Length: 108
Length: 208
Image 1: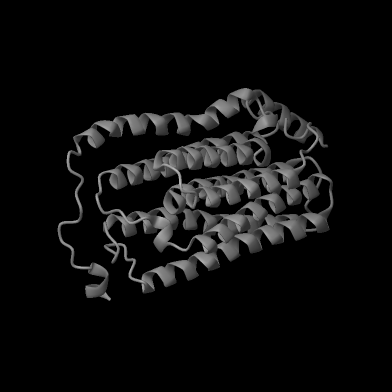
Image 2: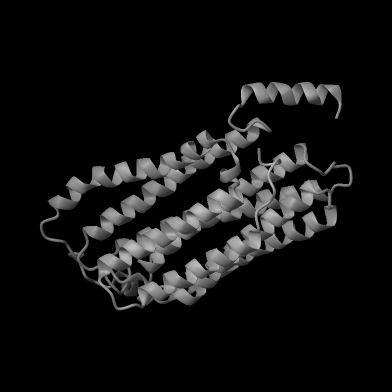
């Protein structure tokens, strides 16, 4: 499979990854709602990961089933987030560390 | 291609329809999927702990973003040199393959050096695995565990790629689309995966 295709222009992929990284850093310093920042950063990271997997790891040129196998961790990760949601809703009062002794100073 | 090799390749083809050119590639993919679940679990756990904490420090105010952005850049560059090295192997250009593989190794080693520098600096500023001066103590714990786990992967990758460089450098190793290409491609899969995971770690640990 991977041997039969014309190789993609890797420098373009590099450029896209570079631009997306710069955008990510720009996003955190943009004064917009926290939720928007989270959504933007997660989408940008997923876009970068997709570029790496599709072109550098040649997934685009493999059997489709292999891509599905590669996606399982993402699916199970989403499931894990839903499993953790009951824990989140149980957090009525977010807790700060009870003992505030600046541990770094005492152990230095 | 010898007759034995033809038969061997035909057998592999029959046994591994997902990656017809080598079963080792499927093996690497399965390993990477498992490894991705390890990282996924760590990151989900990080999210849950951070969500439950009232005094989680804002990461980019305490962890140097400029340095880690450069480290990200370094890993992305080393991914490109990896595919270029692989192209060299495929086209039978030993010198090209050697140079690009060496650049990839230098990129990985440079990343590790910068990470060591970053850790030393942060530890000096008071970030410890059991606490920090800025807020929730788990901030330090998750930081060191997740970036450390990734750093271990980079270390393994640098060793792995050094072995590949030695293999490609041996005059008796036949280049071109064949066994060597498959083996180097499999090592490339691992290396790109390490890059991919860093993209996630950089976003969730440093930027969010």
